[in-house]
Length: 89
Image (cartoon, rainbow, N blue to C red):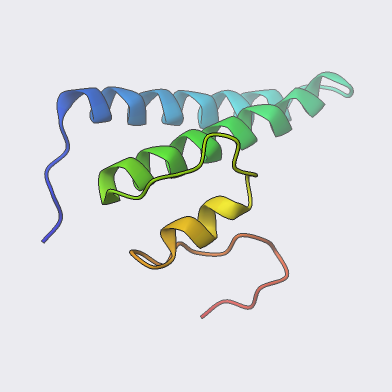
């Protein structure tokens, strides 16, 4: 059974949702303003994976590359697709 989320984690998840929604909003803006959406989406995913790792008790290296997060978490939990080339399971 999953561990309950503490209030700080819930707040941090709300921030992740904010970043995601900001990215959606920015993606609807005219070019070149919409390019900022990529950074918002990247930040949302990075923060979410960091929270997931913390919640699962997985230690992430300080200077880990973004794509290495999936490999660090994989022994504990299989995260969905890290790139668009992977086939759905």
